[in-house]
Figure 1: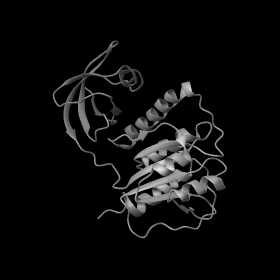
Figure 2: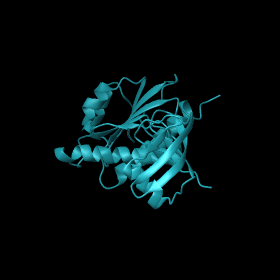
Figure 3: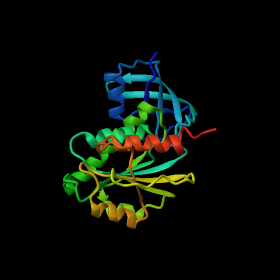
Figure 4: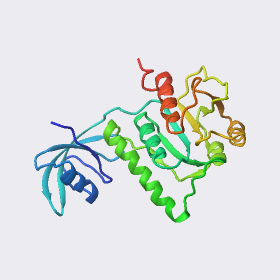
Length: 243
């Protein structure tokens, strides 16, 4: 039997009955074709998975009985804040989806000198909500019970100055810095847009204490670089660096 795992933005308590939100209920009933008596897993971002049973499934909604909670322990021990410059099309969606699967802690869309994506002020909140849904869906798939937050877009210089992680890194194919020899517990990772970080962007980063590194001899796309970088950091200091 397939495992159904969904995000619900409401309180979950053992032995309670919960009527699912309209969007979640529609997906469960119409897309996944669930039935009364089916077991599903719900999570609400608090770090716990709740085993639930569908007790009622009607046009007006879906009700589940909440069972026991468990902790999936799918979070990386390395806290990573990703500053990712905005890109066109679905590249940004793809990048944050994969970053979530790779264990990122938080994501901030960035404006930089070479970013030519313009977000009207009246559409920013809707766009952030869309990105947050992309992240939630990625959590449903990969088993995470803590949902990374997608922050509102901000200038690269402002984001860089606000970072207080132990290690602060930015990616550029012409940089020659090396990763710290001492294992950090937190990392701020800056990834540029199509065309890469400009000289001005790199100066903003270095002025804020960031170290420039490159990921091998090949130039990676803006949507590929975060996944590769997070995989390397995870292998060195995160999920794979466990006893």
